[in-house]
Length: 544
Image 1 (cartoon, one colour):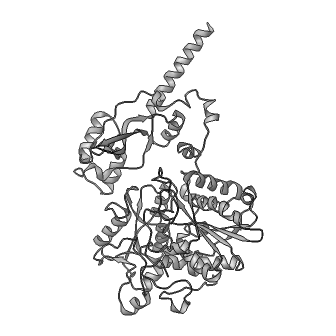
Image 2 (cartoon, one colour):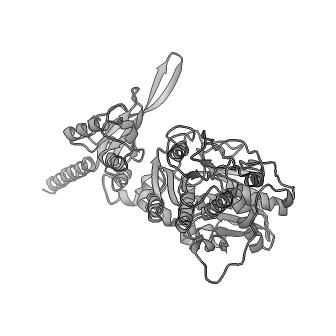
Image 3 (cartoon, helix red, strand yellow):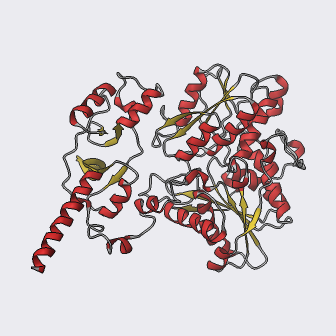
């Protein structure tokens, strides 16, 4: 399949050679997931010439031998109120992948990659599955590993939700977290850390969703066939987000073979580079939506199959997700909102009688403390409650600059964990900003983070504090309203006050983010109570 790592997996199996799609304990070097595909099987070539194994859809038994038999055959649902709201003439359908047993479309590839690895002789009794993932593939793999009896280690960036981590642990998986900001090819990235673990642990295997043809094949053989069956072979447009690219490549490949005129629409967040030919918002380098977008183009993604790309932003994605929940009763996740927000624009080109299918990849279970929370939405500026709240609270629209900010104490990344703990103890603080020698903010070190890292044996007392940095903290500017700050402080014990600083070197200039203060709940409470007391005394004097 165009988009895979192996030219002929069948030959590898017959010769006893381990296919290059896998990384094992014996692998000499890491293979990064942005390499060009070497597969020569393309649209138009008959199935008989495919170098891959292909699975046929099976009739499911009335009683399943285990829960893995429930993977696939997800429902297709009419979208009614949103279709009317946006004035669409076509049929708007949602493929609800959150009905898979693990809660996402990734259950399909987790099962498929494990089955292929077992057939290839790569997975056997005693094998250890390791996978770098944004969470959902990890859940799919962990669920299958639990049933098959494999040890499973999941490496995922810190930005991924707490709910995903809790589900993975409940399934018996071991969790390793990596910095969200780490480039895919840096030593700290989830991809590099997974390879390091693979080299350290005997019988370890990385199935590698970014290069494994089992990823797009799962959708070519099953998801796309289900869409054709559910729509009676009449599909004019399919809209879906792109992450690893397996879903969009597998579905697009099959639909282009069956219906060459079917339009494939890809959705990619601002800050990601997957959408070819589309311009990113230059001010966006981080996005909250999980499961779509990357800073590299995965091997399994075949962008030639995509007819049109739409860029999405966090605010419109989460608002649409909440609309899908509230108006259509579909308990879906944030990237489902991204796909639907693009679909209501793309589907305007379709006429009455035509059909647009939107893939909703996962459910809301993983995001209960995120976009489902009004407080979380307000904190990030996705939901505006200022008019209502400012009428109740005199301080709501005042700015952070109104507070008496303490001058921050910062530390360099070379300071040891023990020195950081002693400094926090002597200064009676729970957190310290970690900055580069230039003053640029790297992250925060907190007592809670250091405790977690020590328990995980990721650091010891002599480790540089850079190994214990957390990127999960709130940032505000002097112009941030106290209302928004109060929402942040209900979720976190502190916020970092930052400002942009322009540094001139000769004729060149660079902009960096520097720390100018730390603000905690006590700072805000003091301001509110003292201000309230002043207002009360003033009102009392006026009455006399």
